[in-house]
Each structure stands twice: as C-alpha cells, then as structure tokens.
Amino acid sequence: MASLVIAEHDNATLKGATLNTVTAALQCGGDVHLLVAGHQAQGAAAQGAQIAGVAKVIHIDDAGLAHGLAENVAAQVLALAGNYSHIVFAATASGKNIAPRVAAKLDVGQVSDITKVVSPDTFERPIYAGNAIATVQASDATKVLTVRTTGFDPAAASGGSATVEVQAAAAAASSVQFVRSEIAKMDRPELTAAKIIVSGGRALGSNEKFMEVMTPLADKLGAAMGASRAAVDAGYAPNDWQVGQTGKIVAPQLYVACGISGAIQHLAGMKDSKVIVAINKDGEAPIFSVADYGLEADLFTAVPALVAAL
Ligand code: FAD
Image 1: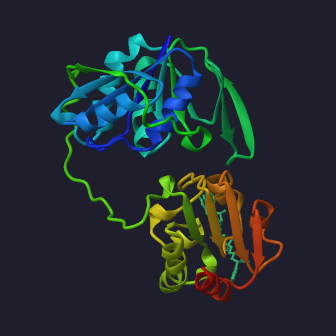
Image 2 (image 1 turned 180 degrees about the vertical axis):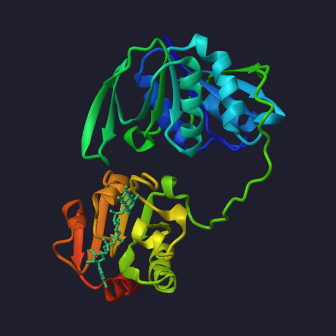
C-alpha cells in the first residue's frame, strides 16, 4: 500500500498546500510518493525530496505540463494510478479540477475535502457548511481523496531525503492547450497561506471605505485581506478575497472580522482560525459565538483606534 500525492507548484517552488496533503497521505499508512508533473520543474522536485516522510519523488517533465492543465496532469496520474492505494490531492482549485477526472476514469468514488483520516479506508469530512461531520468509508480499491489543508498540519519542508525518479510523460489530451493566464499581483500574503487575516463585511459600505479602513489595519499587522460574500457581491472587495463556504477556507493564527455578522456560510470558511477577533456594533451578532475576543463597537472608530494603538 502506498499513496501518491499530487504536488502543487509553479515549477520553481512547491505550494504550501502540498505539505498538508503529505501529512494526510502519511496518515493513510504506507509509503508516500510525490508526483511533480511540470515543465523545467527541477526546483519543485528538489524541494519535494526534502519533505519529511516522502519516500520518492516522481518527476515528469513535459512542455504540456508547464501550466498544470487538469487534462494533462490527470493523464500522468492515471498512468501511475495502478501502483497506489491512495491518490491524494489538496482540496484547492487545482486539486478539485484534477481529482474528479482521475476518479471518473478509474471508475471509483472520490472522497472530497477530508479533515481526518480515521483508518486507511475511512475519513471524516464536513457537510452542511461544516455544521455536521460525516464519516465516510470508501470501498474502492483506489481511494481518490482531496484534503482540506486546514485539517492537517504541514509536513516539515526539510529533513527528508527522497529519491527523485525522472519518468517520461504519458500521452495527454491534444484537445486542450494553454492560451494565457492573468494573475493578480499582490503585495500581501496569499489568503489561504496567511498567518493573519483581516476581513471586512457589508458594514464597510463602499469599496473606498473598505480600503480606507481595512488597509491600514492589514498593513500594521502584515496581514492578508479577506471579505464576506456580502462585501464581495456589493463590489467592496475583489472576488478572490471571499472567505467562506463558497469562497476560501482559511485557518490563520489570527482572524480579525470587522462588520461581519457571522452567517454560517462565512463561519464555514474561518472558524478553525486559532484566534478570532470580532468587531461588530450588534452584541447579538453570531460572529461573537466563535470569537475569542469580541469588541461591541462601531468599526469606523474602533478600527482606526486599533491601528493607532498598534
Ligand atoms: P451582514 O450579514 O449584513 O452583516 C453586517 C454586520 O455588520 C452586522 O452584523 C452588523 O451588525 C454589522 N455592522 C453594521 N454596521 C457596523 C458598524 N458601523 N460597525 C460595526 N459593525 C457594523 N457568505 C460569506 O461570507 N462567505 C461565503 O462563502 C458565503 N457563501 C454562501 C453560500 C450560500 C449558498 C449562501 C446562501 C450564502 C452564502 N454566504 C456567504 C452569504 C451569507 O449567508 C451572508 O449573507 C454573508 O456572510 C453576510 O455578510 P456580512 O456579514 O458582511 O453582512
């Protein structure tokens, strides 16, 4: 029994989610191998070999793998799948794009978004926006899993000494080709990797106010910025800042929620944060039920006062 973890990377470096996925795979038992499918991704493969617990890195290099196209990566995974009892992806946009293709082609059920490995065939996963935890037993010979990264500590990025095995690429679908990508440039930490997040809600009232009030706080704390769906839908904050059931799932060391009511769909995305601070002028707001520190106050005075005090 061995697990194959599909590495997320930009060819040069591995993404942090890979480390949490390795931890989940190690808990499934057996050896853990890491697939680095990319183009000129020696850097990512070398990093993978350093991860504690990884026994082997399989490095597949092909121009068609440069951009992580799901069709092409899935073809590589399928070519290797027969050797593995578990095929493990991070439950990120990339992992969620590739895993179902692999599961469908293998004709097995996918177990999505696991937060705990109970035994090699039994897993826990949240349902109903995290209000219930389902225990799922997979009877298929090959378990295709996506891993909620906030549910597993990252494996140590150094200390391992895996071998790197270079393999030829399997033929991939010729019907897809990469055209272009438009990547937002950010000076701030990426939301799902940030240690501190400050989030704003509908209460901010406009994009101008959102930036005017929340940016200084984020700057002072070196934080990533997040938002509720109401704030995103109203155009106060960009779409990729949305935290919650239909946004990003985060679990930073510190989450500061300003003018966010704490609807279950928002809580589903942030309630595993280590320390939660809520600023809301309504003492009955549900966000206070998950907050470690609550401040019942008008955010337009409280946040600038906090910034001044920091
Ligand atoms: P509101 O609920 O309007 O809350 C605003 C809060 O600000 C209130 O508590 C108010 O007391 C407070 N306030 C007002 N003025 C001030 C002030 N001056 N100072 C301090 N506090 C003030 N939501 C998400 O966030 N993420 C999701 O991923 C998500 N997915 C969803 C998926 C589905 C299928 C559905 C149905 C809904 C989803 N939602 C999601 C929406 C969610 O139900 C809520 O509508 C949304 O989270 C509310 O955003 P909010 O807290 O900013 O706004």
